[in-house]
Structures are given as structure tokens and as C-alpha cells.
Image 1 (cartoon, rainbow, N blue to C red):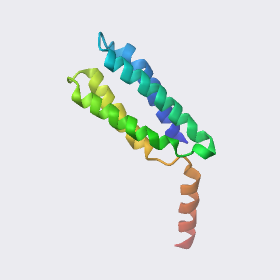
Image 2 (image 1 turned 120 degrees about the vertical axis):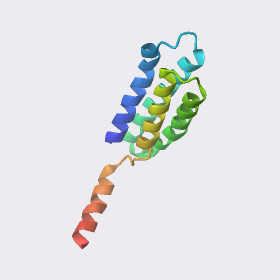
Image 3 (image 1 turned 90 degrees about the vertical axis):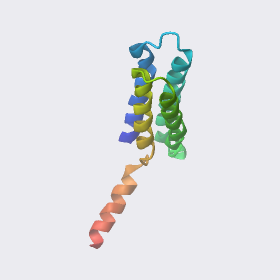
Length: 113
């Protein structure tokens, strides 16, 4: 679940970044950061409930949106921030929610060889 905690940290950064970078007059950047931040926060908390253990995969479209939105904007620090957060979010979204299964499989493979 460490990946979900890092996703939650990225969500909090997205919620704070409009204030850090001061998107002056750019309402699209404000909306993108705030809406994506709330969505990522919710989607990173849902896998803690076992029926929704794959909800973190819904962070992939959000990550793609952040990458595209940041890449299509003028090269400003805020745009680079969205690209970097999008790439990190995409990488974390691919990590399974239940790491114990992978550890058990690795232990079984270790006992065979």
C-alpha cells in the first residue's frame, strides 16, 4: 500500500501547487490541479477497501491528462510540474495495491530453486 500513500502525497501536492506556482488568471490550470488532486486523493484511498482494490488504475487517465495538459501549455514551471506529477502518478498507478501477493509468490519461487 506504499504506492497508494505516495499517490495521496501527489494528490496533496496537486491541491497545493496552484498556491505555490500562483496560476495568475489561468482558471484552466487551477481547475485541472484542484479537480485532479481531489480525484487522485479519492482513488488512492479506495483500494484500502478490498472490493475496490483496483481503483488505483483509474489514476492512469488522470496521469495522461496531466501529462498532455502540461505538455500543451507554454513551458512554465507549473506546466513542467504537471508533467512530472503525471509521469510519477502513472508509474505509481501500475503498482498493485496488495503487495503481499507478490511477496508470497516470490517466496514460493525462492523455495523451488
